Amino acid sequence: MSQLSILAKNESGDDPFKVDFTADAGRLKITCTCPEGRKGLLCEHKIRLAANDLIALEHPGSRGRLLEAHVWVIQSELANPLLKLIEMRGEGKTDSPAFSELQEKVGMMMKDGCRMEK
Ligand SMILES: [Zn+2]
Image (cartoon, rainbow, N blue to C red; front, top):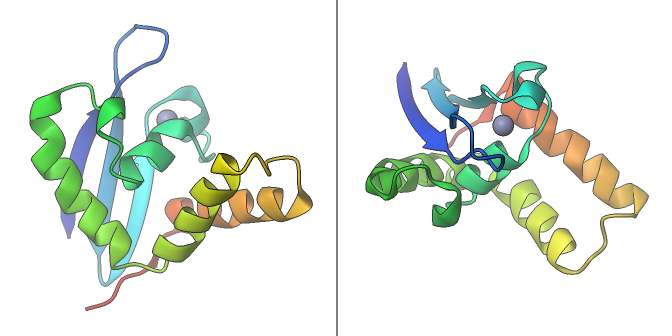
């Protein structure tokens, strides 16, 4: 099992949240210690770090580790749904049922794990 732990900024300025990327037996899981993340829900920290968003980092020095985690994401089944989710947000399509469905899918993939390419 390989794990990359990365701290994400807390928007309220309090202690940062820890996002864990875990690669185990060809599957990738992503968890977060924020209140939503602890309930297994999709949160901004997981989305932003999975998408290699450097602005979400607590410490700029962890960008190397973030890139490593991002490569895992790119190599996983999560890559396309995550890209689509970010695109739809950029296009302001967050009210559509398709967006909710996609959000749920991405959340489940991060929580339950998804397949990685070898
Ligand atoms: Zn979170």
